[in-house]
Image (cartoon, rainbow, N blue to C red):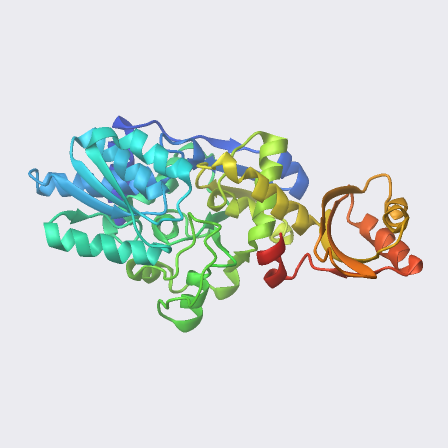
Length: 415
């Protein structure tokens, strides 16, 4: 047994003072859909609704064992690591200063305060995680506190490996495939390192949001690189640079095993898991499930574990998630219609709509035009094919229109 395997098992046992193992549940819906034996490791059901409590606990436990007088810990987090640190600070009776991006969902901020109570102070600094991280590290150096990295720390990586310990403890045989979400790489580095010793035959797939593929970029370059731009929608995994220590454990990952999940598609997955299974997943927590259709050929007939890494979903975001999901699945479109300024023109357009077509938005953009007016229209329907019929009818009727659903620039200003 290697030191890492032993330490991961010790960490898993130590954290039982905080919470029992998270459930590993077979999902009949997904198993039947993909012809596989699919299990969900429900990290969304931990006390802080994510796996981040594990690394935070293990790192703080080991620091306090060496330095019992250490009283202040500092972290930077988009939310889940913050909640884990806050929970563990209160458990150990130490103080925490938690730096969070200004863009962090309010639900995660409120939960962090609730978990930490009087033991934590929250500072909102930076639009992106990497800005927040720099501020936290600078503060930590000034006051002599101990910095708890969200992922790039050996003890944190070791703590996250406890997910692997738990699932192998309860499975009759090791899974054929494990699918993991990737942000900074702590969970992936820990689990892959553990499996490499205990079940080297298990195949791994890694999933990043398309707007933040830091692991893929690093694998391609052979070293960590900083992305020029990231999309922060998947806030729990939107990291511009993979960790140095985490990449050391992931550098030999095949590039074609690092998948990118489009943000709008993730929204569709969130809604499906909520509506069909009653499982609440945040965007990062849905990553491993989101790529199952893409991997349908590889997983057929195999035992698969998807780690649902977090369930800290702010329901104030639900309208945006629904909107993005509808646009991705093709049941909602926006277009600009050139409407003649004459009596009956609007009625002519309305008569073209089918029985399943609903107007979700109708707004004149040029109210002073003499002969024609430009109208922004949003249409919801029950099946994507209905738009083929609608646009064909508009063409036959001689209407001029432009589909702007996929026009990101116009969407920023109009939608």
